[in-house]
Image (cartoon, rainbow, N blue to C red):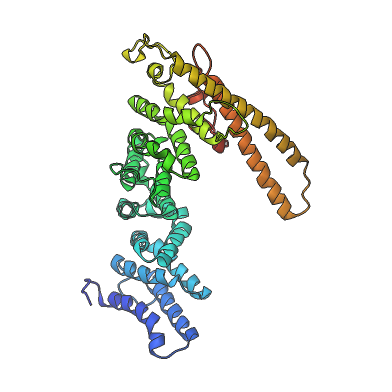
Length: 436
C-alpha cells in the first residue's frame, strides 16, 4: 500500500479494522460471528487508540489514520445490528472527542458518497457534533478553518437537511463571530453556494434549495452583513420569474423578501421597489366579488416589504405609484401628474382591507366554534389544536394586511410601518421587533 509515513503499528491498525470486517466471510463464519468480529475490531480500535488503553506505543492514532478509520466506521452505521451500530456510534463519538478536526472533516467528506452513507453521516453530525460544536471546535483555529473549508466545498450541492446542518456548524465557529466581519464571511459562503452570477432557473430542481439559502441569510443581516447583493439578485433574477414558481415556492420567496426588507438601505431599495411594485399590484385585487381570490400571506409579505423599503426612499415613490412626498430631490418629479397611479393603488388597498376585515369576522366565528368544541379522544384533541393554530395564524395574517393597507392609503401622506413602528410578521409572531 501507499507509504503514509506512519509508524508500523498505526498502519497495521488501519488495515486491522478492514480485515475485521471482511475476515468473517472469508473464514466461512456465521453472520453472528461476523458481526461479533467487527464489533471486537471496532471496540479494540476505540480502547487502544482513543482512550489511551492497550499497547499502542504511538499513543493516539494520527489524523490520517483517524480519517481513514472514521470513513470505514461510518459505513458500518448502515448495519442492521443494533449492538454493532451502538459500538460504531460510541467509537465515532470517541474519535470526535480525541480528534474533532480529522473526524469531522472525514464525516463531511462522506457527504459526497452514496445516499445511504451520506444520510448516516449527516445524521451523526447533526446528533453528535452540532449540539457540542462550540465546545469541541473552538479551541483550535486550525480545526475551525479546516471544517469551514470542507463545508464550503459541499454547500453548492447540499440538500435541505445537509445545508441546515452545515449552517449550524458554521454559526457555532468562533472565527465567524467577529460581528459584521464574521457575518459577511458567512454570507459570502452562502452567496457562492447560490452563485449570484448565474441565471435563476425557476423550473430547475435547485429552486427550493436556493430559496432556503436566501432565507438563511437573514440571520447574517441581523449581525451586520450587507443584504445588497442578495436583494439585487432577487430583484433582477428571481422576482421576474415569480409566475413560473409553484404556489409554495411563491409564498416562500415572498417570505424571504419580507424578512430581508428591514435591512435594506439606499439605492437597493429603489431597485427592489421597481421590481416588486408591479407584483404587488397583481396581488392586490381591483374589486371584491364572489369570484375574487386573494392570498393574504402573499399580500402581507409585499405590503410589509413595501412599507420597509419605501420609508427609506420616499422621494422615489411619486413616479412609481403616485405617493407624493417632497424631499427636495430631483427624483421627486413633483411637477409630473401621477394621480391615476395613486388612485389605482388606493382602490386596491381599500379592497384588500375590506376583504381582510370580512375574513377576520368569519374566522372569529370559526374560532368561537372551535373554542366550544370538547374533544373526547387524544386524536381529536390534536386535530382541534391544529385547527385552532391554523385559525389563529390566519387571523394574525388578515389583521396585519388590514393594518398595512390602512396605513399606506392614508392621505395626504401615508404612515410607513417600518423599523420600530412595524408589527411582527404573522408567521413570526413570537419574535419581537420589526425585523420579523
